[in-house]
Length: 116
Image 1 (tube, rainbow, N blue to C red):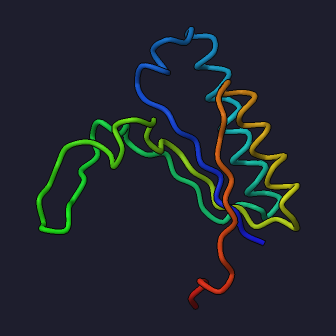
Image 2 (tube, rainbow, N blue to C red; image 1 turned 120 degrees about the vertical axis):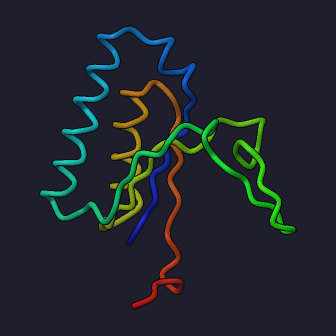
């Protein structure tokens, strides 16, 4: 089963933390990526620019600065993992949430949507 684990944040979240916290969080992320890669569970992961750099393209081709919703924090990082079940995806997400001190979202990738 594949799941996407998503982390949401903005620059002010990072600036509000201590240098010590940022270093611990960064070390955790490197370790997590390495562990998921070595276990064969990591399909794909990326760190995104902050949402203030995003461009929203509307149906008329108009380009607007910012993310889709101004009311929520933008997506900042994600992992696609292939794990035996939802509980493993939840455990990975819980470890991330504990370190970043914020909720993360877990969503199952629809198997019927897989393309060769």
